[in-house]
Image (cartoon, rainbow over all chains, first blue to last red; front, side, top):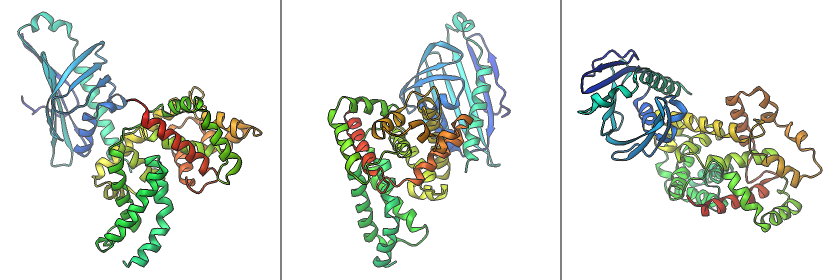
Amino acid sequence: MSTTEKPDGKATTVKTTFHRETRISTEIKADPAIIWALLTKASDYTRWNSTVTSIEGNIVLNEKLKLKSVLDAKRTFTLKVKEFEPEKRLVWGDGQGNRVYTLTKSENGMVKFSMIERIGGFMFPLYGKMIPPFDASFEQFAADLKKEAELIMNSK
Amino acid sequence: MTVELFNKEFEGHLAQLKSYLVRITASVADAEDIAQDTYLKGVEKINTFRGESSLKTWLFTIASNLAKDNLKAQKRWTENVTDITKAAAMSNPDFFKEAMQIRMTSPQGQFEAKEHIAFCFTCISKSLPLEQQLCIFLKEVYEFKVNEITTILDTTEAMVKYYLHTGRSKMIHIFDGRCALINKEGICHQCSELNGIFNPKQNTQEELMKIDLVKEAEKGEKEHLFDLRMRILKEIDPFQSKAAELQLHHLEHNRKVMEKYPD
């Protein structure tokens, strides 16, 4: 997957017959440890992330999570943490797709945060239309993360 | 540093050290044991103290490491600890008998709402993850700077800031939902209830209005109210205050209840 998109906090979605991929990236002026802590402390998510209504479980490798999102408040997503590389890369997902978070340090002291979700499969043409677009939710997630991480970084 | 000088300086920091330890462990015995072990370890390692940090920071580092070893084996408490322990106290006739005995006979048996506010914070702070709890006390009550806390807890400045911010945010949220002193919708009135029991001749409302935290509550500035709450903790030595024995009795009760409380 390419990570060359502009870190402008705007989501883009590409659809094909069997897949849909939404991606976003933004630059955050904060230590990657802070961003990583925010992304991996499940019990703290709903405090700063307005797109998540609940998340149960521990965000560590091979653990299962139960996540509810504002996109579909009635549905609980059961996800597995598939990759966990501290301060660099986190992947969770289910049979339909994966969400990939990456943190990349820039030379200017910023951290590029990217989030990509790719969903699909052979049955995707049947159910794809029922899945709401992720763009607005992605933009809110990235904005919330940036705001919270920079607030913490600038605290005394 | 000579052992004589160390002894003298240790004595000067002992009250704050014990205050910190009893607040993070909620146990008088553990606080005293860890303070003593801190002294012994300090004497043993005095030759390694290079003055790169203050002696106070060095002592709190030793004490925090000893306390962390002790606390990591214990479960954390829950946000509603005061509800759980209140129910246990109500069903235990000995609790109020002992408390009233202390109230009537001990020079440190007064009941003051301020003391109970500090006690309440101590209990609820044990619902935070350990690092957040330690950071909050070190920064907000014992006035260490962020860079000193990185030394005490052997972590990075970024993580100290993260622990402080998240711990503080959680505590503000918990008290905003629970504490009737700052929120009319708050569900916990224990300060008022206990003041009525232990100081029946006082007008509780008048007493509460003497406290800045309560006076300022109407303005609803949550961050400021948290700072006022922290100021109360700073002003109180849990071992030396006029209410110390009564509040430590309550704390021991709560610890015993929470140790047995199922996950």
